[in-house]
Image 1 (cartoon, rainbow over the protein chains, first blue to last red):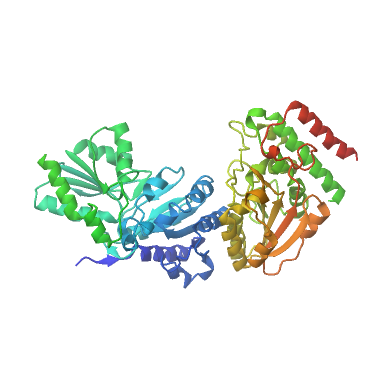
Image 2 (cartoon, each protein chain N blue to C red; image 1 turned 60 degrees about the vertical axis):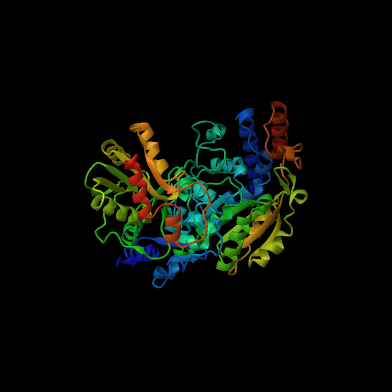
Length: 313
Length: 275
């Protein structure tokens, strides 16, 4: 049985660790203090926690003001809102003046699925990726979130971090290695197939990889991209130059996310065909994350079928 | 500083605004009208009220200033130059390539700017963040935000006003430059914003009114003692104040100044000096 742990709880716990380590943090939520687990910090450091109510633009601007005085600020709400409702505030008042605000965007991808299209962010990475000065991160599990929040909490830079909602499968452990802008090679058994993936969907990509290796005899490389921007160009070029078929797997629209990021690099440095496993360019619907992942082509079975078709051609 | 001295500072500020907006050339046109309406307000803040140090623009204890109506930045740049944050010659590089003086305020390029501004409706919320930081750190500094009356049409102004009132931020002062015009015309003919005082009061703000061109009146408003509430000062002003042909003529919201207009304007301001 796969262990499940909440990425939102990892965020709350990491905030507490940062405060305990003497980082001068402030957290601003938008009626999301409880849902984003800021309460973990509030119990011990109530003076560092603010909730400006259902007002995401206000949340980002208050965060910018706090950061302008030298504080390390975490602004936290849901991906759909932080990437759209308060996008201009993020771009003009956080990224342009390079203020130390980290947007922690919960309910990323299909994790908000039961709420429907209004609450799901399948465009967020594409939207925020083109903003200068912004580091875009997409951790894959509880341990990755904890490590990444601790890392960025010690750096003076604007960030957008997409996390999930309910508990998600644990992939890593306390020894998870995170280096900003570096990919992690998780599987390297051959050169038939290359998989580049990012975020919580890594779990499905890993399940698929194991089966493709065990039952279909494929040798493959799988790299995880916790940093979407700045992306690890060399890792992309390296894998593109060595594998027969290259796919990307992402819980995001086919437009603007990981596939686009990878193609941006390869068009310039090493042109080749890349196959996208991503959400089609259309609005989805309500459903559980696992139902949606299956219907829209991202489950491990979907990935296996997609890859088999590639090799059957 | 005596009030007569402050009045002459305000006149000097206007001269610099007109001089720079003329000399930058017609293709870089700035916003004379909205800059002229805040000349006395900025004079009172920069030469009487705010605890700041031009030699140490990032002094952590300083009072903070945000010009939310960032398009009025010629007035702010002139005040900063007069205060000694940078040389007055810099003013003539406004809106030029490689200039430290951007088309709208940039906190990273210009010493003395505490918050980037220009997109309307955002400054007050940033001020709330700064005022909160002062409370967190038990610091005494105050945060002053100048907003335009037109920009109160932005919803975010009210998100911030509501939050500030809830937080009882008695170190936050907003001055509304009530010149009654926005880009496209008379505010009351576009989307009326009145009564502003009742709106702020209902959000738990202290509200006072003043004549935004009367130094004594502005100082009196800025010195209103605060009791567990932020302060909103509604400053009644005249867009284009100080230049006869610009006053109340909204075509001067953004327009280049011709040579003839420049000469008339400077003459009018010089006459005020001799009065």
